Amino acid sequence: MASGVLVIIETSVGQVRDTALELLGTAREIADGGQVTAVVIGSGVQAAAEDVAGRGVDSVLFVDAPVLERYTTDGYTKAIEAAIEATDPSVVLFPGTTAG
Image 1 (tube, rainbow, N blue to C red):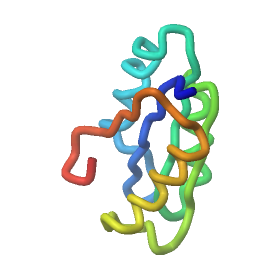
Image 2: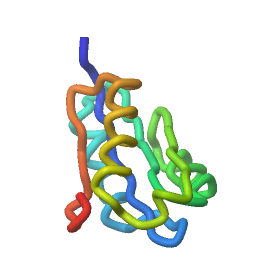
Image 3: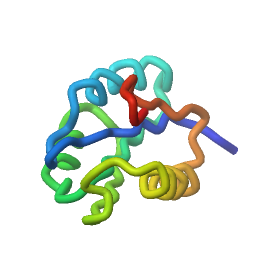
Image 4: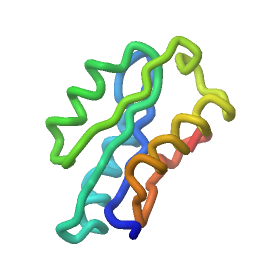
């Protein structure tokens, strides 16, 4: 059964984009006591994932690959699909960007 909220965290040059961080508070409200999971996507994003982990989420996944250094629909779609399969969320939140 689907539950919780999955937040897609975009990065730029290994840093978390502000638009993605803004979603974390909204995710907590929507989750209403349920799980909030963030997935950080990019290249060289382990530090970014650690940053997100300290911002009130219940768990953080990260997909770190050189091919994800720049946004591509195919690469990001595969990463997001894998995160959805792993977490089975009720809601997925994307940043309000051209990639999101």
